[in-house]
Image (cartoon, rainbow, N blue to C red):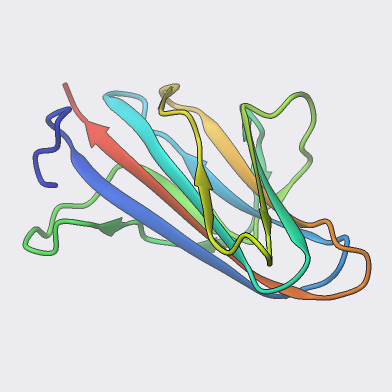
Length: 150
């Protein structure tokens, strides 16, 4: 993983939204560095109740939130990424998302996402929505990406 097939380093960000109320949403914001390439490898979503959706938006500004350090998946390496991430960000999402994944309690954990090269120096918002009518859920989102400086 230190040197993946693209010659980069692979990281993940885990965001667990506990007791996400029905019809509520929370956001994960990431900012890509101005140089190099960030390959969005996969998005994994699980939910404990209801149907949950994650929508990925590009070029959406966000504020506030709590810093989240992406985890280097090569546990023998101390390398860090130039991608910054924040959980619980405030954002106004609009337009057509670049990807949408739907998870249900019946399907268990679902994963998706067409592998994408994210734009340099750009902000992205992953909106996690509980689209159920009456029950809170625990939704877990795992975003995996590879960073290549070349």
